[in-house]
Length: 179
Length: 116
Image (cartoon, rainbow over all chains, first blue to last red; front, side):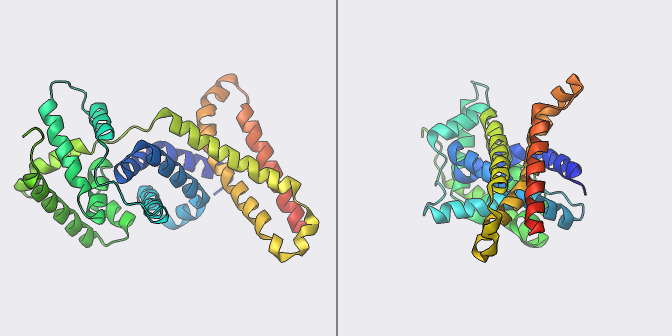
């Protein structure tokens, strides 16, 4: 593959998945500042290894590879700085997300419900939380998630199923805001 | 998926809506890629070939070559944004010329290293 074609392919990857990487990063680290850092580092890593990834992908989509880079960088981020993922997205951040994505003013009740879901997601074990972010924020299927997380398709299916079950339990025991 | 999980899944889709990256992030990533490529080109241009006799110095140019090569790829991001305007003008953009300059510098650096 010549340089021009490689350039075009990287541009396509960037255009197609900037939002995916940013969404993943945001829900992973819980704030916009670190999410921007993580997204930038992900794309820098990606283009350093892009040619090899293309060669080894054998025509398969590169989104799982990209998300895997973000996943590893996020793990380094928490380990190197001795920080843990925020147990909940900041109130301001959460409000911003919900405002940005659910603009109808009269849906206060629905926003409360969604905030409760977000808080419960943050309480899940890391691998379950990640799987749900990939499934619901990025719309990845089981196979993509399996590749991104380095697991088998079957193990991933079980992981997501258990994550949803646990989340249902957490939401059921979380008091509704204002009660 | 079981019926009992339907509602929670619908709520999850809403709660975990994709987040649009801020405009400044795209600019930031592109600028970083461009700076990397320029730094790599400078590194190669200023490299003293005599230092190559010492194996301890081989890492720097090797990194510069690697970064320079990859940086060209990163610049495609910028080229993508510039391509429309450049096509409209019917000639290469300033950025395209800069990419060519960087590529030339990297190429010359590699050739010099190989000549040694």
